[in-house]
Image 1 (cartoon, rainbow, N blue to C red):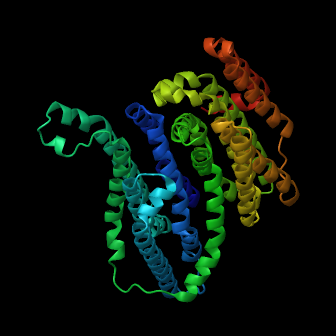
Image 2: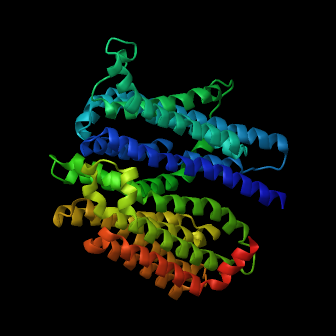
Image 3: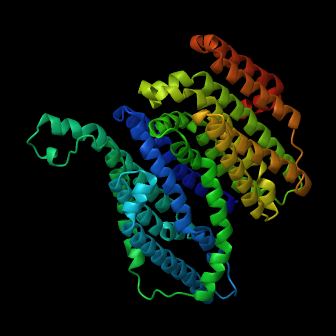
Length: 500
């Protein structure tokens, strides 16, 4: 029982460290769009951050996951050798990441002008990005060791402090510093203020946050007796390369659309389109938060139930109620999207991309269902299947974006549809493969009914302009759908109410 309580406690703490940054990103969307009246400014930030996601994956090259795998893998049962083995894993991983990062830093700084020209992004912003990537990569192993040593509180405090510093610096540099400088043009604060430097301030804020975290972990790099086990390193690389492959596939599915839009649209308005698309995309974060919280809480539970005879039925029941609750969230967020935009995306110049909001929410919901359906290959230790499915999703993302953006000239609407196709395909593939490898008795009729009803009602309320303007249909749809859920799940709902 104590081990389960410990697992629950750690899951909760890690969950806070994961979800809270996403919550804070809501605040940043409103801040950024308020102080960047031109969508192309926000678009430039989005494009560079999208590139940085891919470099993050490449620079870690699966070493984080390999670290966890080998840190707990012992070849002998004696505790002294076990400690020595862990030291070897920490030392080898640290040395590997350190020198690969230094190599990247030297090459990237040497060719930063070339990178800036190739990406069509200001050289100064590229410089910020290079240092951010370096500092973030150098803290991967120290953070991993905290998790491996079961120190969730320290881990979470450091993660959250990074995000808080980034948020506060954004607020100060974008909202407060200009007012201080304007109030006293000859004063102290005016020496720090640069006019029309909003993009630079965003990257400077991230750099300061990343540097702060790295400084706190610097003692990790000043420990004596670092050594490098070549044989162990080769094994870790061999284990980590599929993780690198899966990470790149995930990055393609999540972030490549912004890069493709910047490359394939008319250069005169590409960054503006990406800015509007990215800002409205953030409204879909409501579904992302729900999906993330569900994944963090449910995966440990799935593994803890794996040995039970009725485990498949338990998985089926949980998935059904995830779909029910997710369907209701989808409907509510889409119906009130035009209200939410006043809090998240305040500048009207960005609202032209509101068309994609229902599509992005549906896509993220499909990804959440895929996560729930993917439990089968994790339980039978065939995680490589997940990499293959992600690769299929990546291929669909690339091909559909090309067809819809280039051939049909659908701009960011095409990217949103491509995202639905990618995640929807992953969801369907996982379901049909799982039927053969690890049968789970899903109530597919009910699941599909809830899903179809929610998506249909949401799309009608949003895309039929007359209904969208009054909110009457949307509110009635929410009430009717809620009643339908209660009618079909009355017994379970009443049990939950009585327990409370």
